[in-house]
Length: 123
Image 1: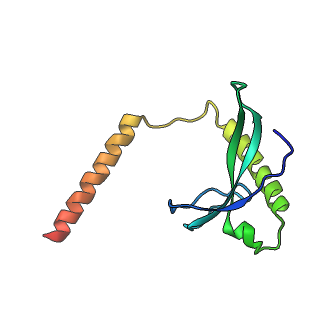
Image 2 (image 1 turned 135 degrees about the vertical axis):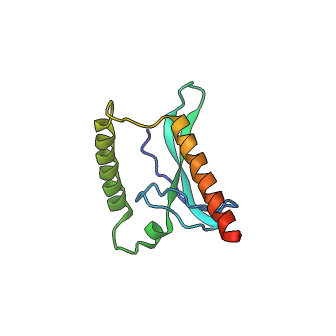
């Protein structure tokens, strides 16, 4: 990765959803304008260009409501991610999960029970 400054600009969007904040790990609101930029990740794997990723900053980080700097938020979030990575690695080889078919059947059963309840309520 390069040491270049990541310029964050205000960008209009027509897709109103809550986006991940790369500074604090929180979420944006469903706002029509987002604070976004591109982080240069360096040469692409194919060697023919560069790789970039979108970096997003939520309204709460912009506001600085808690008096904490963006760099402090980044450091705290990085520590949280490192801890989550440790917890995730500790699960390797230990998960016993239902099959996809079992999950599908449970969803079907739930939907059928819900439809019966609705039908009984309408009667």
